[in-house]
Image (cartoon, rainbow, N blue to C red; front, side, top):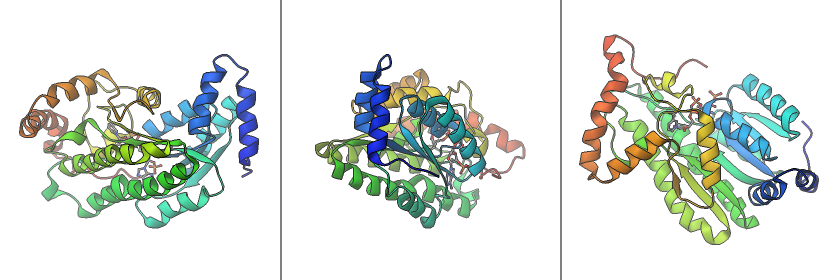
Length: 297
Ligand SMILES: NC(=O)c1ccc[n+]([C@@H]2O[C@H](COP(=O)([O-])OP(=O)(O)OC[C@H]3O[C@@H](n4cnc5c(N)ncnc54)[C@H](OP(=O)(O)O)[C@@H]3O)[C@@H](O)[C@H]2O)c1
């Protein structure tokens, strides 16, 4: 696939500046472009980030396992927005897959990482499939750590850029019924909060996005019943608007409301409030459905 040199991509930005609102867009692109790497871009929230960033004129590296979905999205975005897109099929549960993201982006002037790839499980941990739980730890945490370290180093070296992490409403306390998933998101949230301060002097912005229920493939895969779910577009829009201004953003009114009201309680109290909510989201599993695990892909 043909790729631009950094000089060619800067020229593309200049052309875009002539349009309405172009100067704001180009200032944003100078800080977080010309290329963004998005993991989990084949679906849901990652896909919504890809669409939002393409509208801003950022060139994209789309990462996930389902290559056909990535290729279709890349074609759409190239045609609609005149950007360049590189598709990278990689399984982030394995070090080799994470390494291929690093190797395949070495020649690009990357200004932004959106680490959206992830999945959830639910039900009692003691009846879980240990292999699936381990896979979730690898995708949700280990891959995020490696990519954050690598791109954090690169961005600090160039003196500007951003790291976007997908935390969760469930990242701030223990969650019976999704104990391990919540723990993986607590890891991401805490990593982002520390990195934000570490990288600020280097000109690198870090944000944790902590949505509540979002209408994506996530719930089916985690076998959760979620009501009041929002569109993934909201997550991308609100998070990108807050990048460089906030440490944590809570897209959607439900996430804000629950976040603020739970924050007034001690952590044990937060666990007590979330317990019946999770029981409601997993009650259907008692009727014979198997415990959560990855849907076949
Ligand atoms: N949806 C929600 O309610 C919600 C709420 C709070 C936080 N989040 C977080 O938001 C992030 C995105 O979730 P989503 O709602 O967009 O879910 P989704 O629609 O299921 O999308 C998950 C994405 O992650 C990718 N992925 C999963 N396992 C992977 C692996 N081993 N290697 C590479 N890519 C992998 C999937 O691509 P392939 O299957 O093609 O590999 C897909 O693109 C997750 O980190 C999740 O924890 C979601």
